[in-house]
Length: 119
Image 1 (cartoon, helix red, strand yellow):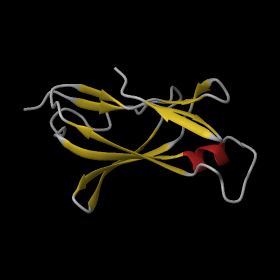
Image 2 (cartoon, helix red, strand yellow; image 1 turned 45 degrees about the vertical axis):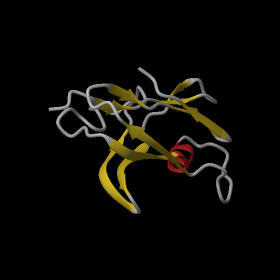
Image 3 (cartoon, rainbow, N blue to C red; image 1 turned 90 degrees about the vertical axis):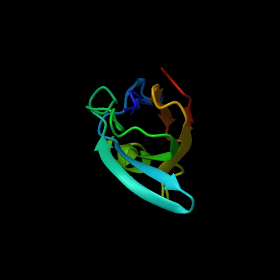
């Protein structure tokens, strides 16, 4: 059984704090198929309460995290735009080591974002 797992952390770099209350959806990609695995919200620390993909469900393959940045920005009262510059942010990545911890954080502002493979 694989010992790896997947986590995330969302930081609102414009406000200098965690992005609590953001909806995140995880998909597994197989060819042209996109299968929804789970949907969660970040807590007050900008993290999910449990791993997004825990041990036992972790498998090699291609995945996509979709962050609902638009919903979060609306909820915190960021200056509205129609449409928002950033709304749904998809991050597609591969998992090759099923015994590793994959951490895919998002650093967000209303007009930009970045990500990396964290630890």
